[in-house]
Image (cartoon, rainbow, N blue to C red; front, top):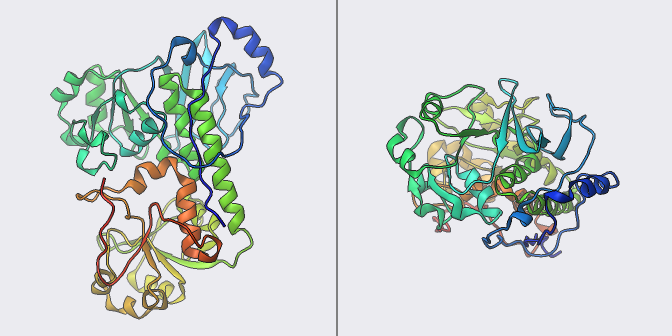
Length: 404
């Protein structure tokens, strides 16, 4: 079977804010996500300047009831299908982004204007911005050497968390600093940036349980550029491709999966409701040792060895790149069937020389490609001609990763 691909292409959007009444009437007979089908091969769209008319957001009226904990009544610009932690509204003629932090159960309201200069403290956020063709707006990043995108690796590096260079950051004069929330708490460096008068917005995409929920944050980022309609179509195509891959693996024998490897002598397993477990389940696998819920649990190396004896496949063994490294970690694992058969795979095919991984960058907006890789690993007969995007098979000799 041929591989399912997604083609992203910018659509021209006529009309302007003076047509609000007509748009509202039209919306009464429309669904929020009027999505088309997937269309071929995905390529990032080229960066283009948008006129004010093109940037005008299309207003649609939808029911305010949803899974979002605290939704304001009124006009909803975008009501997510999978994402639980954002939505877009129109209030008094202003575009508003609501973000929810599940850890603290707090909701944050941000009025949005079109931005020209942004700083991103997460490589994941860079991928969203690049996907909508707005990477030229990125003037600063955190940890440039870990960024896979070669264009964005050249941006000014402002430092990392407690080591941020505030003087450099202020000289960049960003309209927005996109940061990430940490376990429901406000980090000291975020407080410091706010005290300096910077507009800091903590994006909680990493808290989404479903891979498509994380990808749907594409629309949230697009709102800062007036590109919601484009991003909505892109997400619909991603969703459709993901669901087609999922249907391909439905009904297959569930392959048993061991995941991860010890990190600082602790072996972590993702919870049953985590996005990693959803990936494996949708690819036709079952994760060994997972516990109920979203949070990770820990097991001993001895328990992991028992799971390894059952496993058909071993995935994501931390930073390791060779089977010999895993054998040196604990030579008992060299005797388990999946190791002997060479059925050990890691998601570091595309990485930087310093250890950054594109899996955690563009993978956020490409869950369909991650799912395709996993299906090709667990059920290779379903995708016999598959070209891997993020995963590679570990071997006795080290194969060169793909560097940007």
